[in-house]
Image 1: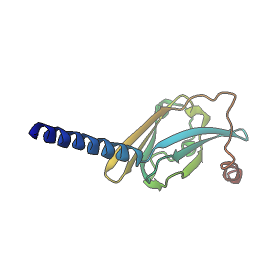
Image 2 (image 1 turned 90 degrees about the vertical axis):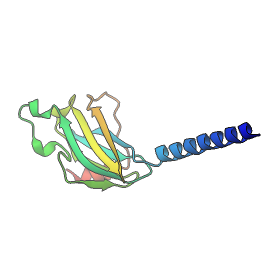
Image 3 (image 1 turned 45 degrees about the horizontal axis):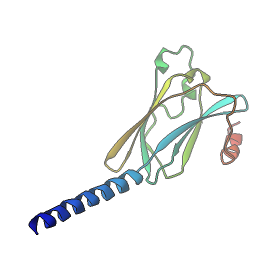
Image 4 (image 1 turned 60 degrees about the vertical axis):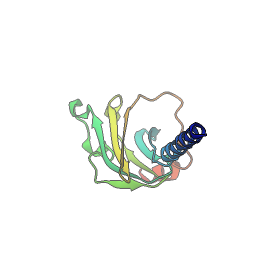
Amino acid sequence: MQYTECLAIILSLIAVFQSWYSIRKSNRPYISIQLIPYNKRLYLKIKNNGNQDAKINNVSYLGAAEIENINRDHMPLNNCNPFTLAPNEAKLGLIDIKLINSEIEIKYSSGLRRFTYKRKLESLGTNVFINSEDRPFIDTLR
């Protein structure tokens, strides 16, 4: 009987750990980026697709220092003050076309947990569409 009880306790602990891990993984912020061409300009959209608020601590463009004649005003949120993105909230900014093929790094946190999102800003294909939710906001940037 003792072995059966010990096995039941161990299996229960494993089940509790798996539940805790899946809940923790699903309840966190997930940052994504999107390049949006519109009216001969290029915009960078940073969005929180997760279920928790994301505190954006730093946005940096790796390799941007080597680019000549880059407009520093067109590096959205570069070395910005920390700000928070709620679930499904997004920020949009005009981006310099010279930053294509450089890498963006976004450091963000939720509570005590810290995350880093790194991605190369890829050149655009021919089939890039603008979400209908972004059009009114982009129109105000003209």
